[in-house]
Length: 211
Image 1 (cartoon, rainbow, N blue to C red):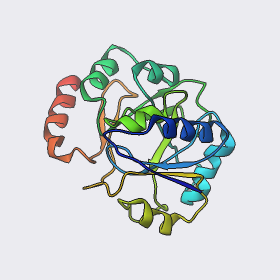
Image 2 (image 1 turned 120 degrees about the horizontal axis):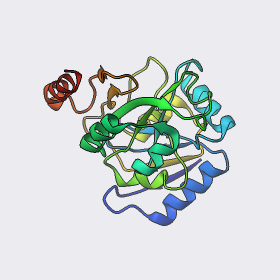
Image 3 (image 1 turned 90 degrees about the vertical axis):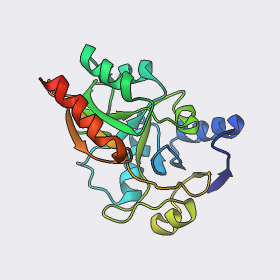
């Protein structure tokens, strides 16, 4: 297992490239986002995706969310309409996951349903890691265990079946992303996460769209 110490403000792009190469070869990485540390793998490599489930001891019937670099990449894996684009452009990049109807290119190993959760973090490292292909983004913790905020504690919980760690130190106030379902005609708040201080404005916004 490799460990790369890195500055979130000034990441080493050569090391980012090495991390991408590891995922391209089927590896799994531990990496920081604007919410929590996540487990990343190339979503088009089914064996790598299955490793994520094994590491987390997660039920394979439960979907994994996907991290993309930008809106163009998002449209490759999910269907967007005028309304969903408006919402996504308003809140992303940021600590949000949007549930959308997935395209056929997304493997059932990532999501066995017709939907997929997608996010664009407000975090340079995360977006750079997804510059060649979308990657999984799921909190780096055992299922039903605490979500921890630094790599040392995370590795104690998960074990060492991870190929690379990008360590930026402790993530203050680490909480999962807020989840909004845009897969139906009425957007729905599914989970109140990281951006809880703005949750009332989010609710108000969604209610206006539902009128």
